[in-house]
Image (tube, rainbow, N blue to C red; front, side, top):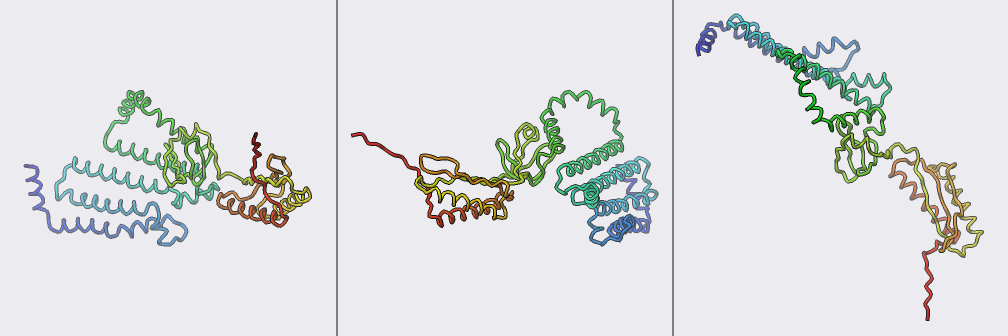
Length: 354
């Protein structure tokens, strides 16, 4: 109570002008924080940049926050003598200012390593990396984690915590942590293998034992898959690395295959004409790969004459492939009708014993 009374007594003794100047310092840095941050960023940009690009910079908003905090800190320094603040109070204020500044700048630096940042885009161009490249995204995530770890150590040091004692404590509990985090370690290792081996990237259509869908995100612990039922599944990376994965997006071509069973009494001359016309139709089809075309009198079945039609198309996307497949089927039916050739029905002969 005595300290509070002394503080009130000191405050009443402060000149009104000192209070006005301190408030003016805070307001000045708060009001002009945007302009000062804009000017600082512009100084470091050698090329002329538009105002919107500067305001979209990763350091613009953190700088604004820092400048506002700096105004408060300078105002407290100005009022040190009028308030008769002792060294302990000023030490706490200084440590708080340093910790907040560290956090603010760490956030700005971490934002520089996002896929939308200017720095990341320049790195993509120099490294010839695709924006959706999983390994590049992983590198950015690792960089952000390192930045936050370093900032955390700086904050711990400012708080006066002995890092040697902290490390020793971690060593004592290391065995317990290791046993409790085995699954996490497996998932982290699995995520690393995914980024290195690149069995798939974000946007790929993959199929596993129990899941099938489009990859939306790959993190350290799990992979997020959007299924065709529009549900979202988070699959641990350890499960993915131990599973067989089919990456449908890596297909270079799709197979078209069908069997036509003609009636058994179809004249062989018509069979040959149908075979030749279907083969020629496929060759003239833009999407069909000519070297892969096979149209053969494949087999004689109980129901009739089997024609094997086999080829590959350039349509990798499934929807586009279905459209091309439909066009081919229409043309095959048209050829059969023009040649007056009919498909055989599945028939069975039944003998009735008297």
